Amino acid sequence: MRTKLLAAAVLLAGSLLAARADIPGLTKGTPDLKSATALAFGPNGLLFVGDPQGAAIFAIDTQDTRPTGTGDVKVDRLDAQIAGVLGVTDKDVKVNDMKVNPASGNVYIAASRGQSGGPAIVRITRSGKAEALPMKDVPFSKVMLPNPAQGKGTQQTITSMAFVDDRLIVAGLSNEEFASTLRAIPFPFKDADKGAGIQIYHGNHGRLETNAPIRTFTPYKVGNEDAILAGYTCTPLVKIPVSELKAGAKVKGTTIAELGNMNTPLDMVPYTKDGKHYILVTNTARGVMKLQAEGMDKIDPITTRVGGTAGVKFETLAELKDVMQLDKLDDTRAVILVKSGTGLDLKTIPLP
Figure (cartoon, rainbow, N blue to C red):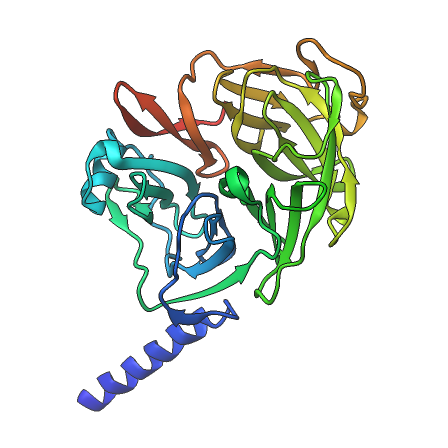
């Protein structure tokens, strides 16, 4: 019997090792994160973490690949739970980003422990339990960014990320002439090139801009073209062809909407409902917007000054207020992080 159990254990261990072999290029160790801001998920629970202070991006195998249920995620005073896990006070917790792991349905938070307490990644299970993601002796890899922004722009070296077709698309600022930069970094990581500089026409400002960072973006097919839909402060929506994201290129994006000034977009999520396509955008000052994605390829580019809103049609969802973070939970639901009183609540909502 003992021999049979030992053989079964060996077979199980072998199968688990085989299951992890589908994430190449990782080495066991301790990621030396200096900060944790933008997050993105790749396949099989692979988590990408942007570290603007260290001018680096980490790929970490969370080993969180088993679906954990289909129920709603709901956590009141999430900031207090995160504080308890990290051993700090509620006021010392800053949430920088939130993403759902599509492999498991668990929610991941990039957080900071106060002004100088260091970065942390916290996992929220479907049952609402907060737990720190292990960061010691984990499979990971790291790539350095060769031309990060300096001085006051350092924190914006990495502003948003998404994994598309074996490449990590990274938005942020660099020290190049066109400071606004999009990089397409192949995975497994080897080296990151200097990326493509992005120029846009900002209708509310009435001028071309190359130094404004993309605040959030989503990969999206516009007509027959693979594109990045990028949101900027004050709030142009810009279409950028993925095919043009080459090292050293200077790319002019096409502004297809102006969504209102005095505002910064925070998260952008595409979805389909009743056979129609939409983009959901949450903002600092203009609530949650539901954009019509149908016919984006036929929108006339915005090339002259705009005093208010223009381009892609949208509606503001009055029932959704103070939404700080947003991501899809599945095809019919989203999770939102909402400012509530003095704290933050995590909720599940139907996609509108």
